[in-house]
Length: 136
Image 1 (tube, rainbow, N blue to C red):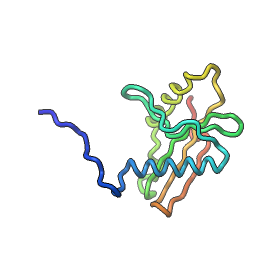
Image 2 (tube, rainbow, N blue to C red):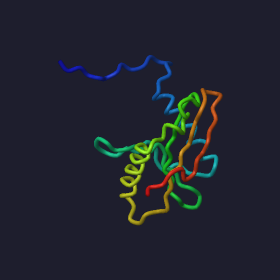
Image 3 (cartoon, one colour):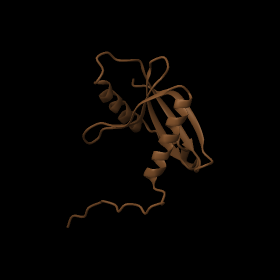
């Protein structure tokens, strides 16, 4: 017999991984806007299976299009937030970025940044890694 893997909605007020991730992305976006970047797009997904997602697409003051991966962890164990950005994850982000760039007639300068949010709510630190990896 086949069973659905649908999960019931979390009770109101319960903190889920999705809610923590959304909160980290909002915090990262506010931080980057405060650093002079402008939000262009958020949560861009490629169609189909095996694609990737870009958490934030920002524009730097010099015109560079910045693809931002936001990683959140409550503790530094197991490499913390930064330790979760594997080579496979980078490939999926690069794939999504290439798909995103198909809408442009001429390619703007681009880079891949990572924002690490570590700690629990109210006690979080933010680390912004500019040009954290490249598409080559």
